[in-house]
Amino acid sequence: MSETALRIDTPARIQVSKTYKLYVGGKFPRSESGRVYEVTDTKGQWLANAPLGTRKDARDAVLAARAAVKGWSGTTAYNRGQVLYRVAEMLQGRREQFAAEVAAAEGVGAKKAAALVDAAIDRWVWYAGWTDKVAQVAGGANPVAGPFFNLSTPEPTGVVGVLAPRAGYGFSLLGLVSVVAPAIATGNTVVVAAAEQAPLPALSLGEVLATSDVPGGVVNLLSGRTADLAPTLASHQDVNALDLAGAIDPEGPGAAAALEAAAADTLKRVVRPAADPSAEDWTAAPGTGRLLSFLETKTVWHPMGI
Image (cartoon, rainbow, N blue to C red; front, side):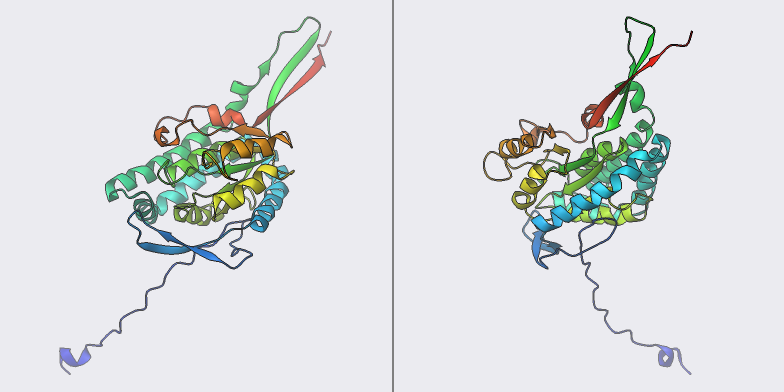
């Protein structure tokens, strides 16, 4: 039989489009509304449909985050560092996928997108190294007048609501990691409203977290309209703190001032957005600012032995 006779024609394959979902409680639910919205690149070309998260989704995410607080905050700092390092490992394995998503979201070239993904990987490693060292920075032994030991130690605040940096004002992956990693490194759990116009890298990050030993509920990722999700997080009585990096300004329900006012009713800690979000450089060394923002200080007195 000739070589030609052995040749089999392969029919054209149907492209398998990715279905993006929310990441809540370690699972991948669709929005409770069943609705989606179109995500486009910087040139207006369609990329995918993202779940249109609702206030109900935000409340469900807060429940999941609250349920995870005890276990995650009770984990040793060293073990939390191992988990964060595992996230970096898994993200490294999917570097090409994330570079493509970042390139589309940010409108940058392949080389720049790959550099941003590498920076996000490095940032996970950086915060992984801080988990068992932050107590030495935020705590210490206090001098007192009397025969007592007086020791101050940091403890996590609890559930943190996070507005990820917006497209055009930050980086869809690097900016996200820069606000999520420090919060969970210190034992908090988070509910994240991804950048409304560029949510795909955030939703894909959920797939990385699900395979990275991060307990379900520690990180919860929502996509949708910031103006719908943010007020729910700001006013929710079971959310202990807010990071408003991606707050809408200057007006509207998602504006930073309105969210701060809503957060004040429940005495939340609040990290305000930069005065000029477009000038925020997420590639710069992060420092310890956000690492220390969501910590409480517990002071213990103990009598000295005779």
